Image 1 (cartoon, rainbow, N blue to C red):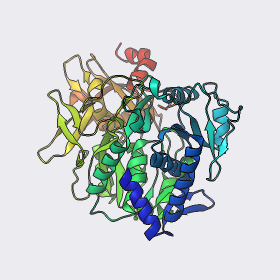
Image 2: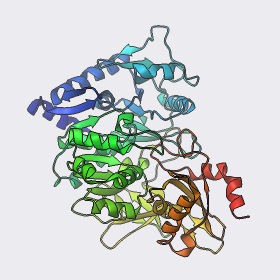
Image 3: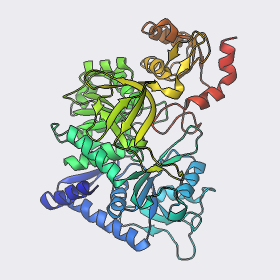
Image 4: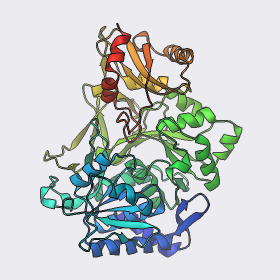
Length: 509
C-alpha cells in the first residue's frame, strides 16, 4: 500500500486544503482536508504504537473515523479486522477470538452493545480502561488476555504480512477469516487504477458498508488514489431499511446533494433505482459517471433498462480470496451480461468443467487453517470467456441443479430473471432431482395472483426446463439475522432449503 500513502502525503503537501473525506451527519457536514487527513492518520498511528496493538477490530457505521483508523493501522502494518455491524453477538465473539484481537475501535453509542455481549470479555480493570482516540467520539476498547494476539497459535505462516482479515459470513453462519497482505491490496488498487486512468476524477459516495472489502478497496482506496473526496454517511440515511426494503429516494437525494461521480451498488439497489426512475430521479443522478455493480448476479433485463435510462452502469466480479475485484466493465470496454475483462494484476481461465480459475492474486490463507494456499484460486463459480476476453458468470458450481430429466440449471440465472420484476424482492430456486423448478418467494405484493403473473412473465423468457412451476411465499424476508442472507446480499441456499424443506416437498406431492 506504499503508493497510496505516497499519494496521500503528496496531496497533503500540494493541496493541503482540498477535501479528502466528508462525513454527512444529516444536520451538518464534517470536512477533513488532505492535510488534516495525513495528520490524523499519524496521530491515531501514534496511539496504536503507544498501546502496542498488533491486531484490532473496527466496529463502526460508515464515517470518516472508520477510514482514518483503517489507514492508520495499514501505515504501521497493524492487522485490522473490519467487523460488520449486522454480525450477531455470537459472530462478533467468534471473530474476536479467532482473530485474537488486542482491542476493538468503536463509537461511544456502540460500546453498550459490545460490553453486554456475553461472547466478549473486556479488560476494563487492571489499568486497561477504554482509551479515547484523537478522533470524534472514537474509543479503543482493550480486550482481555483470552483474546490478545498470539502469533504462534495463528496458522498463517506469514502472519506478520497480514494487513487485513476480512470475514465472510459462511454458509453455516460462523464467519471465516480471509487473510490479506499489503501486497494483495496494492495489486488490486493498482489494477483498478490503471484500468480507470482515462476516466475523469470524481468524488465517491460510500453506499455499501465500509466493512465490505469491495467498498473499502474499490471505493475508498481507489477514490483517494485518484485524487477524489470520499463521502460517508450512516447507512440508514442512505436508504437501508432492512434486507428487503430500501428507500431509494434517500440515496438519490444524497447523490444530488453531494454531486458524486461514483457509487458501488448491489444488484438489488440498482433494481430499486431503475424502478423508481423518472425525470426528477434521473436529473438528481446526472452527476454520476460510474455506477459499479458487485456482490451478486444482476439481471440482464435490469442492466438493459438502466443503460436505456442513461445510467452509467458497469458490472464487475471478484471475491475476498482474491482481495475483491478481479474483472470489471468500463466505459471503453463494456458488454451487458458480462462482468468485464480481467484486470491487469490477474489471469482468468476456465477449467474443463466450467469453473472460473484465477491466477496471480491469492490470499495468504484462511485464519486458523494450516493448508498451503495454492497459486490458483478455484472460485467455485461457473462461467466462460468470450472471444473478446469478456468474462461471463453463470452461477455457482455447487448450486447447479440437475433435474430428474437430466438438465443442468444454474439457479442464479433463473433468480436474476425473477427478481427483475418489481413484485419479487427476493427468491430462492430449487428443484434437484425434480421434474420442474420451484421457488421460495419474498414479494413486495403478497397477492398470489400478482406473484403468479410476475412468474408467468418471467417464464416467457426462459426455456421450459428452467421455468418455475411451483412456488410458495416465504414466512419472512431473507436476512443476515435469520442466517438466510450473506453480508453482501447473496442468499444462503442450504439454510433456506432446510427452513422450507417440508413445504417445498409438499409442492411436488
